[in-house]
Amino acid sequence: MVVRKRIPPKLLKPFVYGSQCALDAGLVEWQGLLRLDDWAVSGRIVRAFDIDAGTHGRCSYIPCNRVATILLLDPVDYGPGELFLQDHERTLVHELLHLHFHFVPAVDGVFEEPAIESVACGLIALKRGVSRGCSVLVGV
Image 1 (tube, rainbow, N blue to C red):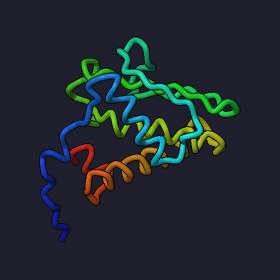
Image 2: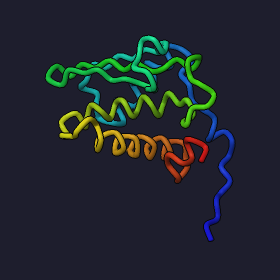
Image 3: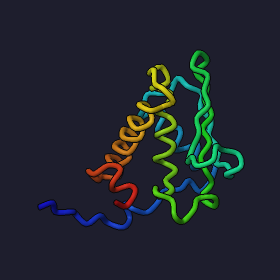
């Protein structure tokens, strides 16, 4: 028998950067934690028409110059029936991890995306003091 621990509602609440200043602070924090301080990374919260359909974030980068831009989907464009809660911090960490995984050969991201999402969820769960990773962060 599997006993499911009740997750405090505050841990399931989606985390959204409320301003550009907050996003910039999040970038500094996570770049340091992920040892990406040698990258020049900028971030912006954008509307759905500025990002690929069906995505929560996008990372464009030039590895040889160590320059990247991360776009996060604006919460106003997040549908109520989405599988995942809107969580800017998780998406930011996911996109930053692409900078470490860019050299891993994969076919259309088949192996890369699940690995990156698992690591991102685990890091966010650790930061928030929970032990169940993505299942906690998406309310499963």
